[in-house]
Amino acid sequence: MGRVDLVLHTRLPPGLGPAVRTALGRLLEELGHGDKSLTLILTDDTEIQALKRAYWGEDTPTDVLSFPTYEPGDPFIPAHLGDIVISLDTARRQAKEQGHSLKDEVKVLAAHALWHLLCLGWSSLRLETPAQLSPRGLYRGPGPGPGPVAAG
Image 1: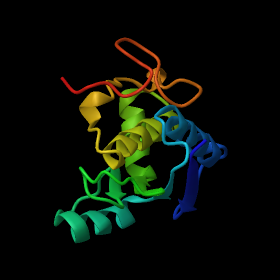
Image 2 (image 1 turned 120 degrees about the horizontal axis):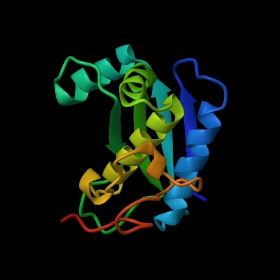
Image 3 (image 1 turned 90 degrees about the vertical axis):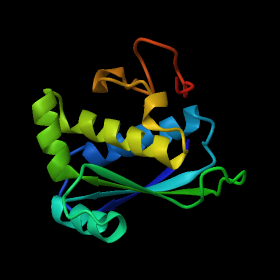
Image 4 (image 1 turned 90 degrees about the horizontal axis):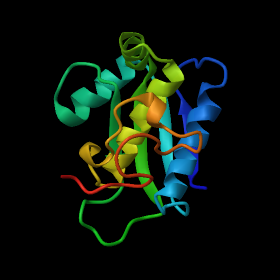
């Protein structure tokens, strides 16, 4: 299983960190990158807004940012894929709006960011609801799966 280093910059509800960490590690494994690692940083709107302002020039919070450690198209994929930063403030609002749990919302955001770290793009995931994340961390639902699907 892939290694996910969890960094907490905000308080977490019980069980959230281990659940997301395990799901993301299994997702790495299922995608054929079980020998890779990444860092998952769970934070708040203030910190993610500062990062978005510094790196994208936009002064608003967001749900998730990804910082790959290599350039797209580089044939060498390093052992550490990069960093994923998720705002739990925004994730809570989105979970409430979508009618699902914070845990499910963070799993979807983490999967989204992993797709970007692997340069696959969100459209290849075809994940529409958190319920489509399998207990093993990847995919369950309509369309092809498990695994990445060609963008079309």
